[in-house]
View 1 (spheres, one colour):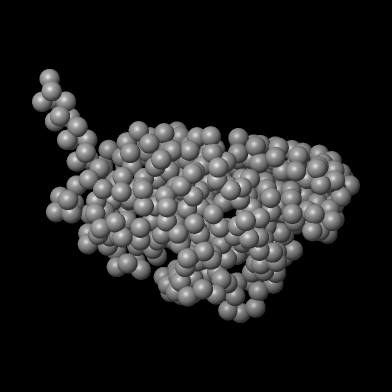
View 2 (view 1 turned 60 degrees about the vertical axis):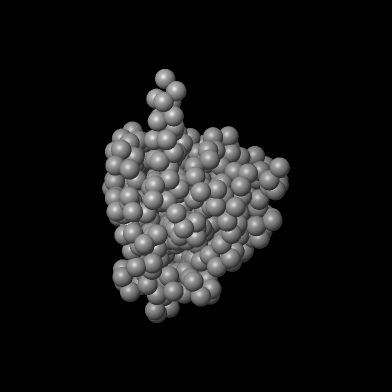
Length: 388
C-alpha cells in the first residue's frame, strides 16, 4: 500500500514538473467567443495573443508555442465543454473567457487540474474576490474599478440624473447595483433602469423611455454586439443630443468603426489605448498594424499585455514546473506594460494598474475615423483598495 501511495505522489508531481526533454511544445488553450454576440471581442483577443507569440518567435522555454483555439459561442455551457477538451489535451495554460460567468465556471476546472488560467477581460469582482483561486490571474480591471471611474465621470460632468440600460446577466446587474448606489451617494438621481437580454435586436422602446425620462445621462452597461445595436438605434433619434452616454468599454476604435459617425461624443472606460507612448506599446502597435492592417482595440491590447507578461514570467523560471510559474506570476511586476507599470497582487491574483477614460472624437488620417481621446487617467492608488 505504501508503494502505491508513493507512486501516486510521484506521478502527481511529474504532472506539474516535467523536464524540457519530455515536452514537445508549450500548449495554450484559448476559450473565447469567436461567434455570437461577443465574437468581435474574442477574435480581437486572439489577435492580441498572437502578436505576443510572434514577438518571441513562437517559442517558450525553447519549445514551440502550440495555440489551440476553441469557440465558446458566447455560451457558458459550451465554454465548459471546450475547456474540458483542452485540459484533456494537456495544455499548460488556459486563456479566457470573456463572459464572467464562463470565466468563473472555468476557474473551478483549472483549479482542480492545477493549470494556470489567464484572464484579460472578464470583470466580475468574484474572479479575484470571493471565488479567487491560486491558478486564475486577471491582468485587467474588475467591476469595482470600472465603477469608480464611471462614478467619477458622472461627478466630473456634473450629471444630476441618470437612466441605466443594463445587459441582463449577473455581472451586469451586479455592476449596475453598485454603480447606481455609488452615484446616488454622490447626489445623482437614478430616474429609471431597464435590463436587456444579451443579443437584443430592438432597443427602440427603451431609447424612447430614456429620451422622455428627463435624465441628463445614460449609463449603458452592455457588451460587444449589443453596444453596436443599441448605439446605432440611439443615434437614429439623436439621443446623445439630449443625454450624455457613458459606460464600461462601450466605445473604442473597433466599435466606432462598426457604428460610424454616430459614435462621436460617446464616453467610455478604456482598458487600453494604442496612443500610449511607451517603447513596448509602440512595438506592439507597429506589429499589430503590419499583421492586421488596423490599430489594436482594447481587447487586443489587454490580451497581448497579459499573455506577453505571463510568458515572460514562465521563461524566467527556466523550467516546466507549473507551480513555480504560478508562484512567480503572483509576485511579478510589469514595469514596461503597454498601459504603464502593472503589479500582480499576491493576495488576490489581480493586477494593479492605472485606469483610463476616453471620449470618441473624429480621427484624422492615419488614425481611424472614430478615435478615442483619453480625457482622464486614474492612478492605481485611487482605484485599488490595498491588500490586507
